[in-house]
Length: 427
Image (cartoon, rainbow, N blue to C red; front, top):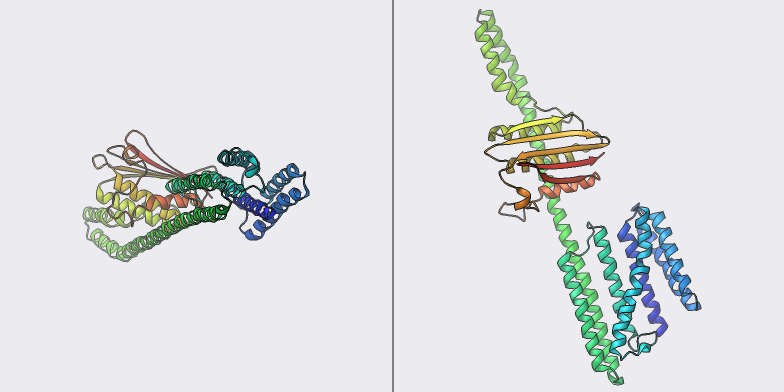
């Protein structure tokens, strides 16, 4: 019975080590993840259990486990060298102190009788549970710090989970102090303790599921936002195309009238007529920006038209094409950036500047707009100020998602009354 309990604890620790490796670093390739994970678990289990069964090989077991984890991380996982070495060292650094603390607590509760917390002792099961649970929570926190994009718990959920864990530890300690020395009540204590342990496990599963569902709902809303943006892009492109086709159709009529005026000996009237056509028709409908992408041009030119209607001065500096980047992604990115700039522009001094350039292998996009007061000071998280926040506020998230897709970065800053959104994208 005792050996089975110790083996179960070892298997649980191996599961935690597998989770630590995969969660902290991430796979190089998503192919055959379960097969890779299963092989690692089997190797760790054999390295952890077999030497202990032989006796006198516990220290060798630790070294073998470290070698297996390091080899696995080099072959299958991402990350730099120091990160892979860190993952290998984390169990050695954190597990022994955690085990020592838990054993000391329960040893003190049992009147400093260490035999009760060692293998075969009456307190061995609670010691194993709380030590492995604490080790698991520490590893999950480290994974969250390393990769905030995973479905790990948020801060408030971690506070709840850790609070319940500590409360469970206190309850178990008080129960042991009451039941200690009463042989007939020890089975009851074991049952109650197992129920408390199960409650902690179910709470963690529930919290993780809630966080996962929350992320999935956010992804769904973001997807809806992007689809709506693509529909707007298509309509804007169709409008521009329709304007050009109309202009092309009417051009014959304009030129005919101008030719008749010249034939009638009215060159001044012909000149005035041509100038009026240019100002009223061609300038309004003609392409203002030409990036080489019809979809991107439609977005930028449509936003410029909106700015003109609102009396906002626009300056564009574009000296690169979007090679290696999806036109729809860039269009959504620019649409959100320019919408934010238009909405946040200072009406007393309205001006917006769009800069798109190539810096080595990166595409640099910057949208600058005048502001009446500091945005980052009053709204540092750039949350939407629209009434229905559940349906809005996804513009910034969409920008960040696209930047992440191209392994890029985004930065918001201010400089002398100008709000600046900078995006760097890799091809």
